[in-house]
Amino acid sequence: MFSFFKSHQEESLNSGRVMALMNQKGGVGKTTMAFNLAHAYAHEGKKVLCIDMDPQANFSSLFQIPKSDDRKNIHHLLINSIKELKALHTPTFINDVLIKSSEGIDLIPSGQELSGFELTVAGINAPRQLILKKFIEKYELRSQYDVIIIDGPPTLGLLVVNILCAADGVLYPFVPDRFSEQGLKNILQVVSDIEEMEITSTPKNLGYIPNLFDTRRKQAATDLEQIKVTLGEATMHEAFTNKVQFGKSLAQGKSVFQYKSSEYKDLQRQFVAMAQAVQQELNS
Image (cartoon, rainbow, N blue to C red; front, side, top):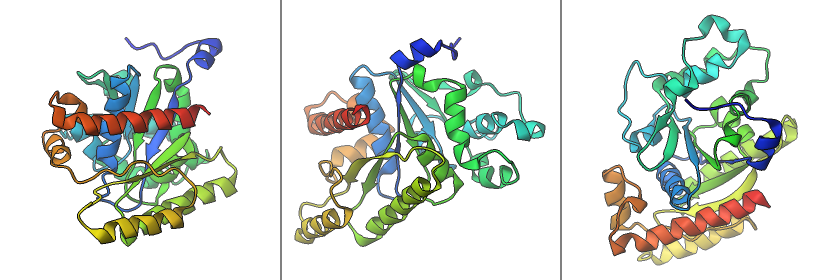
């Protein structure tokens, strides 16, 4: 049985960090990055929790969790955490939802029900932006894990606001093109809006992750340099090229760390380096 309640002293000694991977543009590799980053931390001996906050549940699928109409998920836990919605509560406990993978990474999966989250909580008096943050606090998840990684939807609704309010920092994957760049700008505007609301601390910018970078295209390098100028001084992590190994691991539902072949060593190095840089930034 999971122990979800520890003393304040114990929690302060082991306070895990919450990070999210966000972009309003889909197809930028956000979920793939989150999945491999989780395995990078597990590879380094960290205790990791992944929370899937996208109703499409692609993050959950990468953990080989089959979609099911009756499986309880993060939506049920969030609704159960809101006292004003007692009439909608289900007999669902966190241990009923939490899934442990063979790689030592825990997962709270998503489901289609989450697409109705915004409508479900529309009438409550409690701050709707802080539901996920309060959920993490209620179950003292920070004291149970070194790292909590949240994968969010490619939208700009209440789910995204909840993720940004709950996170200590955000990583921004993107494809170096103008559509993905606009998606970044849209998300960054939401972060700015949260800062102006002053309802919680603003998440740190943990850097941008160029993905699917085509080294054969001269224009790709030019586009990336232009985007760097636009985004300012925040960290620009090493670009991920469109490697065959990346596609192979994704197709098989595996992280790059689940292969012993030398052809995966460079990708493993890249993810470990990014994980270490992010952890250092979060702890600073």
